[in-house]
Image (cartoon, rainbow, N blue to C red; front, side):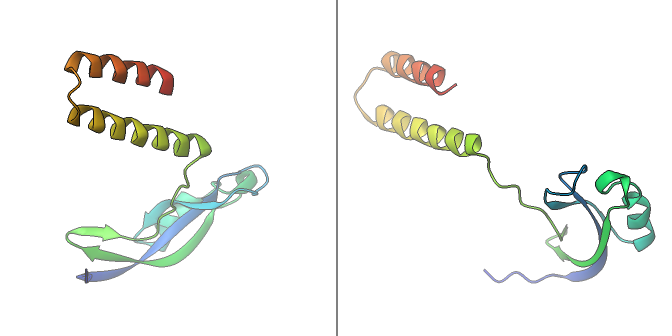
Length: 119
């Protein structure tokens, strides 16, 4: 799929750290601004130990009436991965049960029991 931006804009991104005590976490954007002065104002005392957060210049792109720019992707935790796996297994089993000749009432009993086990 070839997607072309209708417009490109310079933006100013305010980055802070997930660990505001020692700065040992990772940086993530807390604001994307059209003006550097706005970014500096929003960065004031938002960094590690009350310092000013970092402001970086970046680009944002207008695609299908929406602006796209800098983001921070959050990685799933071990619990998120486990919950996703269990949900996928549950959905797969329900689909197989629905395609079988099993009675609807029995399917409901099994799916409710599975839900209690998953939680």
